[in-house]
Image (cartoon, rainbow, N blue to C red; front, side, top):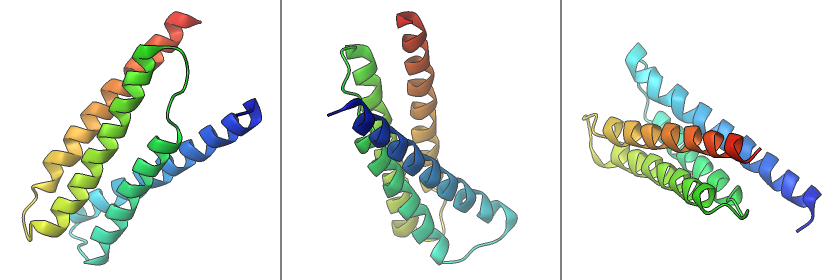
Length: 123
């Protein structure tokens, strides 16, 4: 893979993750404002799958094993988001999906922070 193709792949990955996270955030906040519609579950689920696709496309292929592991952890956070979306559909009227959403968020924060830390060490 050429350097240009790799840069394009990483840009696409970042865009997919950004769009998916924005969709999930908006749909997760709307019930707090007493705006509840059935279609919101679908938008949240599409956002979660978009984040997962972005994480898979942007998989790290470099030599650092720790960074590679942290990118796999980011994929697991996206899987938690998808599980949260599934819980939205399965648990009628309860907010059990929030626990999985927050777990995915905490895993993502940790992995992102550690990736930045590792990248600063190697510079």
